Length: 385
Length: 162
Image 1 (spheres, rainbow over the protein chains, first blue to last red):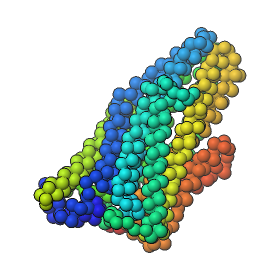
Image 2 (image 1 turned 180 degrees about the vertical axis):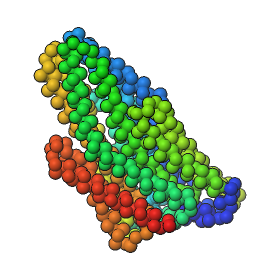
Image 3 (image 1 turned 60 degrees about the horizontal axis):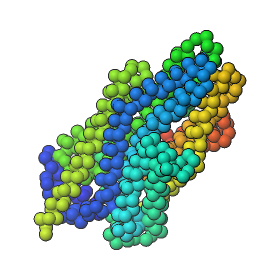
Image 4 (image 1 turned 30 degrees about the vertical axis):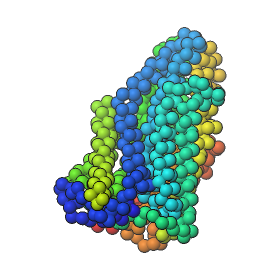
């Protein structure tokens, strides 16, 4: 009911006024059932994506470069231990490197998984009209999905800190168990949604089904749809470019640098610091290539998904357009300046972080609009009693 | 609902479920062991070098490179399957906004679905046959199908907008 009723509300003149009205049409009150499946998925999805982006920005500013620096120091120490013929020290240095890489990897994975879960939640919100299950089951599935989407990244984040403490398994700790269980929950919810979809395709219809989203031809929707498609296409093209021209060269160069690092260190004739620096540079090159590719596509998908919820963003058109422009501008700035980081240094990295922040602020602005809509409907329900 | 929308929405859900199942299987049975092997082969290379046994160090680096080659592709396949599945579902929802005939829409949907299934599959195939031209050709074909479908979709949206 979320779709049709709210779209009807969108068509009301006062919604388009610079200062949005605080009233919604009666028809949409039933449409936006408090904490119905679509409501839970839209709010939960946007909150997961915003939380994941905030975490990503914090990670980029306070952890990423510092962690990379410490890993480089540990690798340099390992090469010096090799030169000194001290294999015990080498093992210690590698234990430290492993710890640093786990710290980095789990934070990166937590960031990626929370955002992916948010995207899937928004997608499921769009699919609700075609899920032939009763409204109670759909709501339960929505809650399970959002809960799983929160627990999965939490588990991943904790892996580094919990380790193998009290674990009965040789390599899997309790945090991994939490993450894997949450992953299984997401899969189960998705299978149940697919089952509902299958029933719909077989012709089953249930009471209380949510109507399809009506076509929204507003400037905001069209701009987000077209901009998102272009962003995804750019991301694909860059990914193809990377896979074709850089991936194998990077793999080959990594092996060459490591071999040279060891040969130099074992010969004790020279310091391997230059090779360690080259190795760090290569890792940075790979990281920015992958980050540019993945962020272009993720922001593109986000823009397309947000194009569907524009009818439910209860703000004046001037503000709605501002958030759309800010989101698309940030979506281009982040990947573009991430790519320039290896050539122009940390200032461009800072600008890229600002780009991420712009996307986050735009997302929060739209979330506030959806919450306002929800609040306006609640107020009307109160008045109707 | 048109056949093209059914293909994209249902195919996308199946692909997302498959990608997640693959990720779960990978996390439980493969990833920790692979990371352990990668870390230990690199550490072994440095330890052997400290012991002045360079041939053994080089062998360990070869092992590290081969393990990392597989790891990168396994993780890529997982993330691309799910990412492409989400894209299929999104385009399933907005397909009717493309200013094309039903037949053209079905072709675009077919290309996107085929590419989304086959591209990450071919990437996984590369881990079984390192450097295989067949796996690489499949990956290139799969990604070209996805890019072509995306470009056509962009044109379709732009045509409607204009």
